[in-house]
Amino acid sequence: MSRAAIAILARLLLIALLWSPALPSFAQANQQADAAPLHFNTPAEEARFHDLTLQLRCVMCQNQSLADSHALIALQLRREVLDLMRQGRSDDEIKAFLVQRYGEFVLYKPRLEERTWLLWAGPIVILLFGAGLLTVSMRRRRSASYVSDIDEQEW
Image: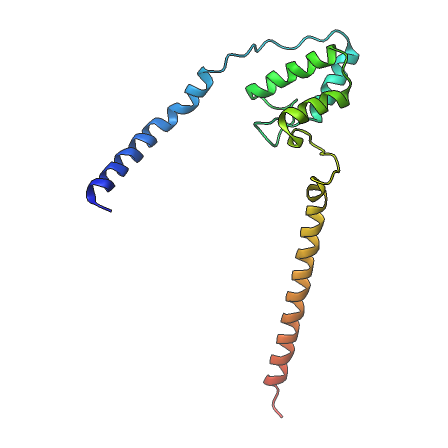
């Protein structure tokens, strides 16, 4: 690379580093959501809503339920779930709607289907593979130590 190209890259890197702390404030400035709390008509509606949002994953946070997330999209999805509930849709219909829109990922417990079998069997397969590797490794060490013990003995 030429000196001019390196100088340009260094300037671009410096500009990116100087602007990076300001980026979150730009992102939050664009969020215009109604932060008013949700109001429920009955305690049964509230209980059903909380149960359902605990079963759904925030599509932005990935490791939080829809009930626990503070992301803007989670707020919007909670409002949408409540609207769908008030339209008379069942929990399964609401989940199917969200899966159609966001994919199987939105469910904390994906359905056992042909395309999701790896999600369910993957941890077991990895555990068995690791146990197999550990067993093979231990046997090799044991046989290597047995051979070295024999070699160290004087006849």
